[in-house]
Image 1 (cartoon, one colour):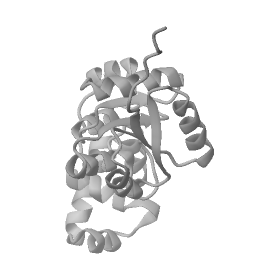
Image 2 (cartoon, one colour):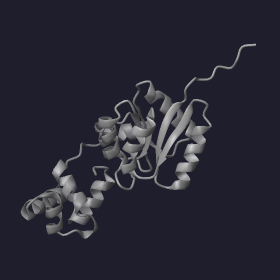
Image 3 (cartoon, helix red, strand yellow):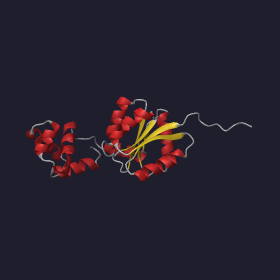
Image 4 (cartoon, helix red, strand yellow):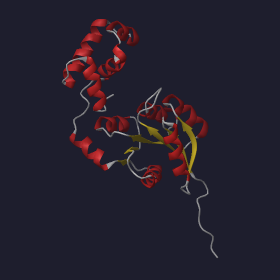
Amino acid sequence: MPQEHRPLRGIRVLLAEDPGMVRGALALLLGMEDDIEVVAQVAAGDAIVDAALLHRPDVALLDSELPGMSGLEAAAELRAQAPDCRVLILTTFGRPGQLRRAMAAGAAGFLVKDGPVEELAVAIRRVLTGETVVDPALAAAALSAGPNPLTGRECEVLKASVDGASVADIAAKLGLSESAVRNHLSAAIGKTGTRNRTEALREARHQGWL
C-alpha cells in the first residue's frame, strides 16, 4: 500500500504581529497546515531581522504597522540582510500608498487581513515559488491612485513632527536648519491639501505614504 506523500521539509515561516493573541492564533492556524512550520514569532519590527538571521525562515509574514519599526521598513532591511527570505506584508487597512511602498521595499506580497487563513497559506506557497501575490481590490485601487507626491525628506519631516514636536526639535533630530524644516512642512501641507502639519501627517498616513 503506497504511503501518503508528505514534504520532507516544511516551509519555514517567521511571523511578526503586535497583538499577542492574534499572533498566537495565526501561528496555531498556520501550524495546522502540513507543509508550513512557524519557526519564529516576534512582536516588534526591530526584532525581525535578528530573528530571520537566527531562524532562517523561507517566508516572513509582517504586519505593516509594528512598534519599533514598521513591517515595510523591516522588509527593506530583510532584502538587504536576508535576501533569500520572501516577505508577505499583512495589513488591516489596505491603502494604495502602502502597497507601492511594500513593492518598492522588495515585498513579494501584500494582503489585507480579512481573508481566511487557507488563502494566506496558499499565498505563502505562491511567493515561495517566485510569484507576487497582491490583494486584487488593493491592486486595482493602486493602479487608479496617483503616486506619492511627497519627497523623501518631506516624509521624514512629517514623521518627525509627531506628538507636536517643535520645529527646533525636528531640525535637531534630522540635522536640518529650522528654515528647511519649515519649507518641507509647508510643501507637505500644500501637497496634501490640508491646513496644518497635524492634518498633513494624518492625511499622509491615511493615504499610506508614510
